Length: 181
Image 1: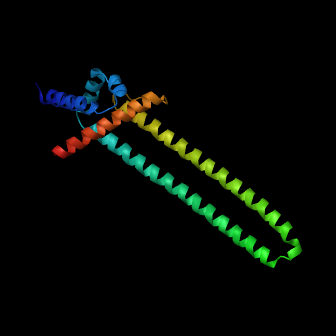
Image 2: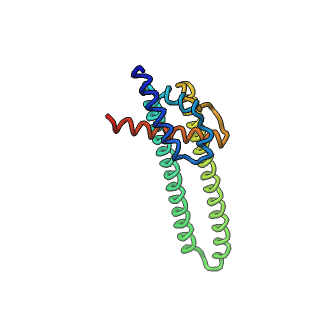
Image 3: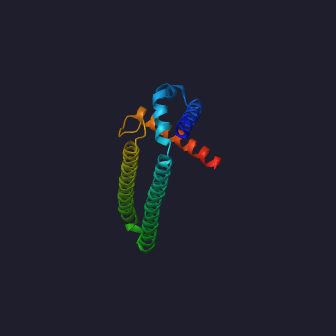
């Protein structure tokens, strides 16, 4: 046996051992052939580097999106406080007989602002979901082009779960490889 074949068999054996920890429904979908093809794709270490790069990009994207959402939330809190203080000032300067009218107008203004805030948050959340969906597609495409078995562009929940499990297997193997060095 060549060193390459020995490494392939070792990776395959490690993959088979790792698969046993997965839910049985997933185990059934990971055939010997799929695992063998995955072990072959992992031989030269390039896929480990690709997965590491994709993980780093994903983490940066998630951090950035979280930061954008937090920033929007902070802006909204500032707008609400500003409006509250403006309303309070107006009420203090208002003549008592005009107060009910002023409060009704302020209530409408507050409701309109809250509606606008909800809409902006909804749009931000949609943007986040779309951006994360695009990252998944980019990852699927990259891994498919790298020849990693089981990866192709899909939105099918079962296939996505399988791909996530494959990524987890690759990550665990990567950690084992790093521990040996």
